[in-house]
Length: 359
Ligand code: PMV
Image (tube, rainbow, N blue to C red; front, side, top):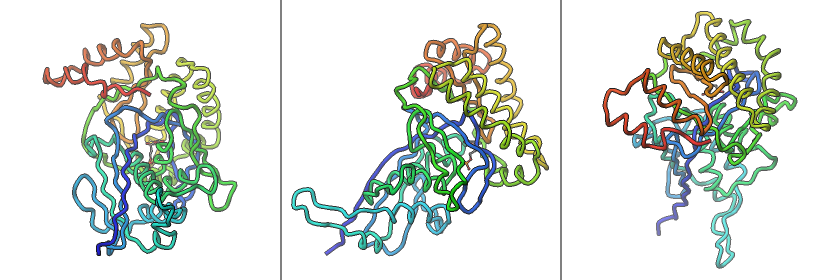
């Protein structure tokens, strides 16, 4: 008889940080030198969909990304940390009708896993980053193994070992990643929901794809050079971020877009300033990115209030946060200065709600 294949499929959206994570405190545990805060995008195309299967019939762990097998990836440290971390929290699987144990905790340990994941957005665009991928991996494994946390946030501590920013995608809404470091095993470096997705549903993210080229400097490599060389980064982690975390958490609670937008833009600028302060410097933004920064400031000046806030991650693409009531105005402005080449695409931007992600 063929052994049974157990399977779970989940999807996880990406998140875009307002207060940036940049710099590792401990490369083994993959923990940050400062707190960070992001918004998990909802109803968006920027998702990873992942199926995790386990069976006694599988002879080794295997991983497929966007349809092709990543040979050897299943033995990478990041992948192992997620699979072994979640499996250690597995519970026995019980037949709902007969109440018999179908899979014991020991059986789970004997099984190999097959993971198949795809991004609903071109991976090369550098937007549906590793955050969605590792969050979906961990969530699929949690479902597959019926895993239970031994302390709140434990799953986020596991996802963080796949990719730092992934820990924030396990929750919806506004999510903080507390740097931790009081505990020697870094079990306090976890993500925590600051406000759920219903709290400030008027917030929207407009994604402006400036370039879909793959980024030149990976975040891991960039962070390590920045930590080693940038005095500005050390100052930021010590003196700046905790103040900004307070400001942004209060702004979110009070739904104060003026304060939220200002600190978001300032933090994006400081992150890219630390990249410039890295030696040799790292340039993620390009001329088009910088022209978007200027456009947003001119728009806000014209409006006499902050209606849009830009933020850029490790690449040239802009994410513009705004409120529902300003989305059409902002899109009209963006399309005026950055017209789409094909009318079809223009139609897509205006009609496809997914291009404007509701928070
Ligand atoms: O999670 P990583 O290692 O891909 O790093 C993400 C870094 C930024 O996206 C630039 C900032 C952040 O907080 O998401």
